[in-house]
Image (cartoon, rainbow, N blue to C red):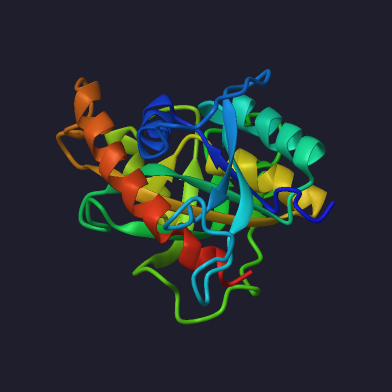
Length: 243
């Protein structure tokens, strides 16, 4: 179908989805087994009644989909999105926690590899199990220069906030500079379905010896998420132009 959505933008955390809704206040929400979603034409025309797009602008039917937080919801929601909409590109926009001294708050990460790190294996080969749930993301289709300043890097994922005492090992073992809850699951499912994937995560907070400013202060994360999601959504047309 000519006008089928070419892109599904998967959003994970509740605070990230609230920021998306604030950016699209008139969106007509629909429900799914995972979370709400809406379809839009993106970027929105400058004048909604104009039948012709601005010169050089490619408007696309696009789905924003709240898949939910954590690896379980993210894996299910990713498969659901692929089965339902059969997108040409799956995009995950969101936040991550950075390692103090390795990355700055507000920095945008273009994820090229994901590692699910919270596996505890005491019967077999630990490294083999880590490798099984690690995913190299094919970014060869992206043309340079990138439309936003980004750091192309690996991201570790686990169903937990970053623990201060684990950060040195994560940095040493994987070369990681940040972690989140969902990217590893999203990337793993997308790779097995052969769907192109773009993951852009902004550093909402940094974790150092004394923890993070967000720990124990949900409002800090929500404010940071709102700022990051606004930047990611604003920059999204430039990334889509590289399809």
